[in-house]
Image 1 (cartoon, rainbow, N blue to C red):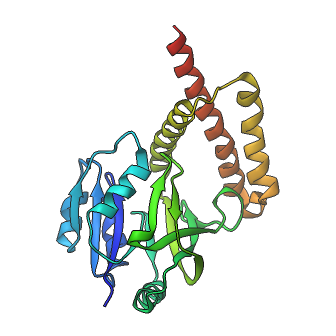
Image 2 (cartoon, rainbow, N blue to C red):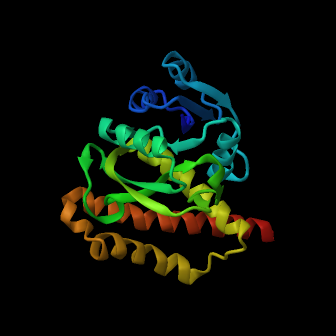
Length: 251
């Protein structure tokens, strides 16, 4: 019988990790790659039967962490799950059936995003498809922030869903906001991109228009408007950080 490992990358996720692990107990193994939590994340995870491997975040960002996770298990199949995500029981049953069938393919699952307690249907946080289930030997990762899976097998879509509790409060939002905009700016800098005035002035409003108008964020009410504004603000901050670093490098 094929072995399935659920891989979870963590950093100070004590508020999320128990519910996350409990939604994945159908797997043969739950493996946490922890990048230096200072809270009770590791203790809680081990208490629920997960195996924890401590590994600092490297310059390769999330892709490097995901590749490291692949090297820590001998499972035939892997499913990547974030600490703020929850698999439904029906999704667990479908994943087990896919693994037992053993077809050489990678599988996408539909995520329903919940922001500050509200299910989002449109805009920047509309439901999305995320490629998560793979034969372990068929995937490698690239990209520091918006990491991408490089696969050598066909892609299919699952019928079941998972829930993504992306932000529970504004404190957690701004913590992630700061971390992700910094990593995004670092990636741009590493790739030789420039933060010219045109990008600083034009890209943020376009990000807002894309989220609020083109992706119909207005249909999610007041929160849809706010998250569309924040989508534009994130682009602005990303380019401001890049511009600041490049200005300092010249000096």
